[in-house]
Length: 167
Image (cartoon, rainbow, N blue to C red; front, side, top):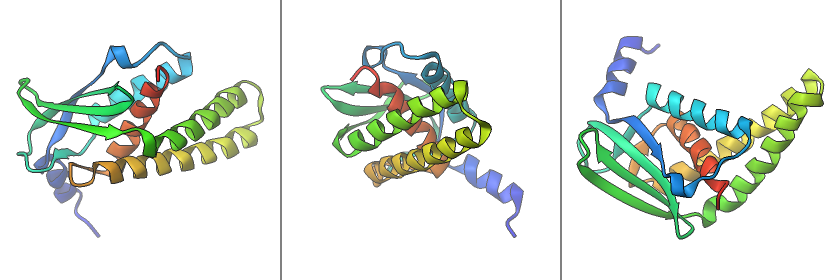
């Protein structure tokens, strides 16, 4: 059995995000449901995360996330705005999973309005499965660049999905 205090100490021992900024040029207004998911993901991400750029000290970080020339850009600074690292990732490995996630989210949002609770639950289970797959791909793409836990990767995938709307 693990000690809850030691888990808290481990979480605070590493770096963490204190702010996440989505590049406004990379996103467009979307449905109220997507706007809500985006806001919740940012809020949850700031509240609890594990985010450590490889080779950098465990401090408080700010992440600016955007899409430039069909590439995903992670621009990391310290809380006091000192540049840390910028990672530019191809969107190709994420393209199919974002498209799949978009389709299932649209089905889910429609189901909320018209379907039975059991139908909504079934679609939501599928949505969570695709979301998990997307966050695993994102973690794989960031391996060796940024260390993060699964929950942080899940919330970041939600934001990557939000950036998909303009692209």
